[in-house]
Image (cartoon, rainbow, N blue to C red):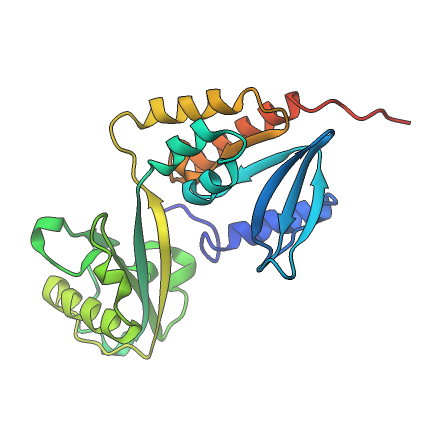
Length: 256
């Protein structure tokens, strides 16, 4: 399988490094609390709480955030777009990653993983045998990495379980599915709350209405996984199109 050396988690860091090298400033732990129109663009209130928030100005704002936060920020400026985005439902998920001693595996795990249909009634919905799927993840001669995912739309209970119960439940399902009996030497649980937008029938029409509602607001556009797809190619394409459209609405600054 094709992938990035070190995993897809390396991609955001590489993009951030490229942006900084091009002169961009990236501010972390700086949630946007509100937007305000100004004669020349937008004022953005940023900060973890009202007492420490500060306002910064911008010629243009691209909301590359989930549908819920985007709806909140757009409510006063594009209420029709906000209502549409509020209607996008989401599912949460958790990834359970474990490291096993290769010497504890009774036999090689088959293939690169498997999916679990909801009708099976299992905790996990999929498992990836990472060390068998990606060459870089299989280089350690002593450890074997695999992961399982939990969390389905309309069933938030699994994601709310504590880490220890998630690990135990995932291992029990793996034992039933592929006969895995090895005990992990390490494990980590990563949760993505509301991380998977749900594309109900009529979703493309909904997003078309969002874009039309924003078309009359110079210097403000929105993009993200809730728009045209959760995959990286879809997110990149949506962001590129939104940024290009945004720039067309902003007057060019005079140059020396």
